[in-house]
Amino acid sequence: MKKKIFITTAIDYTNDVIHVGHAYEKILADCIARYERIKRGAENVHFTTGTDEHGTTNEKAAEKRGITPLEHVTEISAKDKEQIDALNISYDRFIRTTDEDHKKFALEFFTKSLENGDIYKGSYKGYYCEGCESHKTISELDENRQCPNHKTRQIQELDEENYFFRWSKYESFLKELITSGQLDIRPEGKKLEMLAFLDKGLKDITVSRPKYKVSWGFTTPNDPEQVIYVWFDALINYLTEGLTKGFWDEDTEIVHFVGKDIARWHTLLWPAMLKSAGYRTPDKVYVHGFINLDGQKISKSLGNVIRPTELVDKYGVDAVRYYLLKQGPVVEDSDISTKQLEEVYTGELANGLGNTVNRLAALAEKSGYSCGNNAEIAIEDQANIYSPIAEFRIDIVIKNIWQRLAALDKNINENTPWSITNKDELYKVLDYEITELKKLAILLHPVMPNMSEKIAGIFSSENIKKPEGLFPKIG
Ligand code: MSP
Image 1 (tube, rainbow, N blue to C red):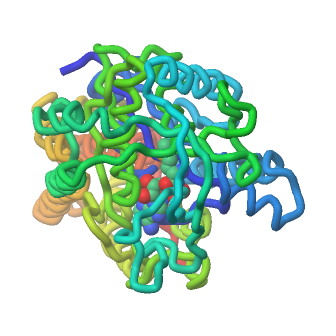
Image 2 (cartoon, protein in one colour):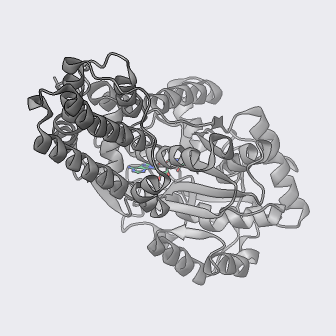
Image 3 (spheres, rainbow, N blue to C red):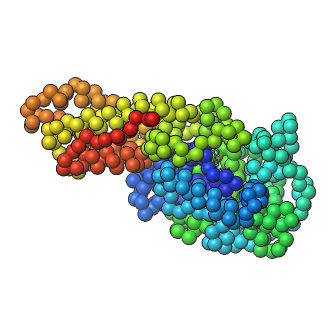
């Protein structure tokens, strides 16, 4: 095992504020980062998220609002950060592609590739989807010549001068990188998909746009009439932070969390770019699927966008995290609904965990029992519960913890501590039961950090009291 780990999420476009679908990725990565801090020590873990602020969609969104692109992205980035903070995402840096240090890295990176002979001038004639900020071949469009992921946006037909990156030069390098496992793409199906794409052959890719078409971006260092293409800028955010903070060396495991729509950029373009500029490549790319709401894609045009804060305000941050993490590693599309969230809230949280906490706290309060800070978790215990994390199976981790909770409830029902009149005897029973509950609370930290702390706090007090409204009734 490498000493350090660098965990990143995709950085979100700032054309609009993030929704609950984007939130899934951040919560998943946060859960892993929190677990890794327990395993490796906080100083050996670095975790980033942020916003991707250049390119056409941002420029057009600002134009529509009659403000400058910088004003627009600054406002949306701040709102995104509020959403991320409401979800208790423990990032070490919220990076913006308009940050000064990132600009320096992006320009230097472009220059390095240019000097290596990997960037050349050419012309591009073809399709472009502004939603994906991506050039498209006809085979990637649907029967109506629309991008399947952005059906409400008009596909652009471009005919323009650009700088190109010699992506094709890196075909065999990428093949070797992926088949050897040096770049570990999870899940396996996504790895095969990426290899199949590679087998079709790579075409060089444009890495700049003419200023008369898009002006919102970094001017290319070699040509004042072009701006760096948004992906050749955004991907570098990882390096900006990783290199600066000492998390882009051989002692660091580099893990990217991304959605299925942007897997190719991260598994095929990004490693080729890094190789070209002379940097090490990442170790792992975890590709997750999409969260749908009540069976429908989450989209503005369908009017079903839910912001994370709307859920957090109603159900509390821990319940939202718990519910989304329970979905497990979403591979393709997974359906969520507020109805199901309410069922989980009531059944597993309020009547499950909350009820156990209330019962034991009430017994301790009534009998004057206290136990201090006595919940040490044995290493094997941690390993048993957390081992599925190696495969990102947080859903199984949650199941493991809930199985122990069920066993604890059984123990309480069998020992009927409320009927024990002898104090020594009662305290012996409570010692076991409360210590077990405190252990479970600690183990819950990566999933529900606030609740974990709250429960540990309740039972570490000298005067244990039955808590009020741990999981309040939903109004
Ligand atoms: N800006 C690019 C990423 C650049 S990373 C160097 C981008 N932004 S995005 O805002 O469109 O998406 C950000 C992340 O959220 C992506 O990983 C994307 O797959 C994910 N999701 C967007 N909608 C989602 C769902 N409905 N469900 C799950 N993840 C979703 O792509």
